[in-house]
Amino acid sequence: MSSLHGYVDRRVLLILQDGRAIVGTLAGYDQKSNVVLADSKERVYSTDQGVEEIPLGLYLVKGDMVTLIGEIDDAIDDAVDLGNVRAEPLPAIRY
Image (cartoon, rainbow, N blue to C red; front, side):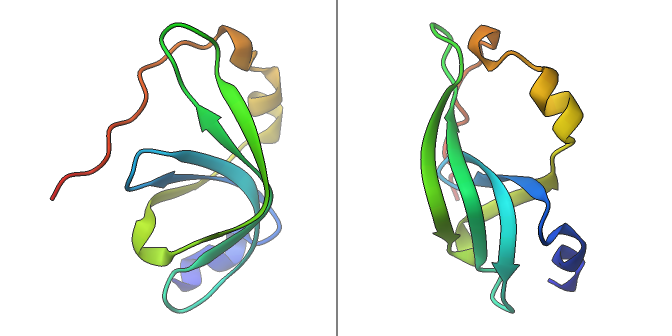
């Protein structure tokens, strides 16, 4: 996953196979696609309440759990009021 090299020290969003959305600063990765995030938070989506952010701190994600990794535009992300966002939680991936 040499394509992740450009994301190191940048804020990214990870979507995991179990449907969780994790936001944090990409601190590192390895050849097995294991990912280390610093200052990470899990974003929990709900149709009843706004998005809840649960602090996770330094977080290791096993590579086979990662479905998607994308860079976050800080200006856009900071402009969004997550308290007003309503959304269905992502379902887990079924094989």
